[in-house]
Image 1: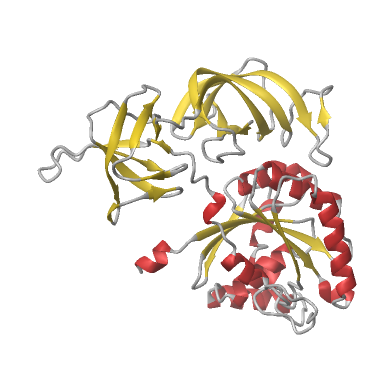
Image 2: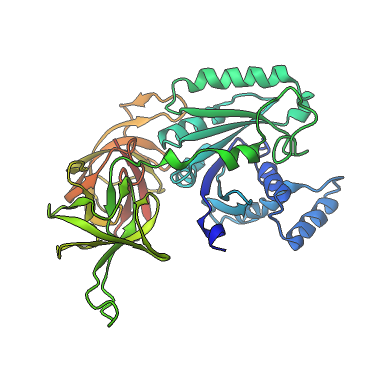
Length: 419
């Protein structure tokens, strides 16, 4: 069992325009990896028969959520979970329309990889570009472009190559290094989990094999040591009478017993005495592991502090430039105070200045219309009541991101990426 728990987890987000087969693709992945319960499958088979279909409509596996949407219940992001012997997966399935930009941002913020679907008949459309731009903005390290419905263009290699070139030309201005292209038919299962006998010209991997073998170890920053303290552990039991550990999740770098560290913001220095985990002590820890660190000296450390290497520290700032995605249906009020959460610290903050809005379809800056509405992405400057320990989002997605919360309703109103 412990081997299963230790398996690497890959989070990926799926995005596409309406009817380009996203639900069918997720259904096909779950079905062909045997990740569906028998009763779920039986329900889908019955629904398919009622609809008068010859084959099982796998899109119905994920479309259960659509009914809720019709009833006016807001669905932000549907998360699906499945596993193969090689890896565990979490799929963040987000709606494709422009009014759901905030949902895409939510689903993509922790993803290692984005799946972008293109309908082989329609090619690269505006939504394709927008999804790729959001993936790039959120620094998702890997992009898999699935050219779907190849069965409707007779599995032609020429169509695949054309769309691959179109997307490559567009994506050259994006900040994404690893882009892969796979020709698939989600409906018939070609190249999703099993290789296609219809497309012998395609020599690459299937979608599942790509997801299972993609190297994600270096998606985290293993250079800059960052450990935001979540809680202080003092068992005070007889066995652990003097134990004082600082628990949290590593946000960057590699920590080892004996390392010299600095506690921020106080600036005290000490050495790591031991690193403990649920399974016992370990000799090194790195992102995204949850650990408890004991120090050799009795220094004052509390929630919201950060342990870093003495010669490599985050910047300490109160005026912070961010790219902000506004998540709320009411526009931000001028000089309104918000609660800001960043790693394990909470401070009060206000939006000091709006620099420009970003056109998410073209990446152009709009400096004229500065009224921020729901789903808008804008560059703003915020001021906090006390300094934060920050890194640029480009360098570290954990210490470089924050959220703003409305103090009255406690709703999250914005997500920000530190520039």
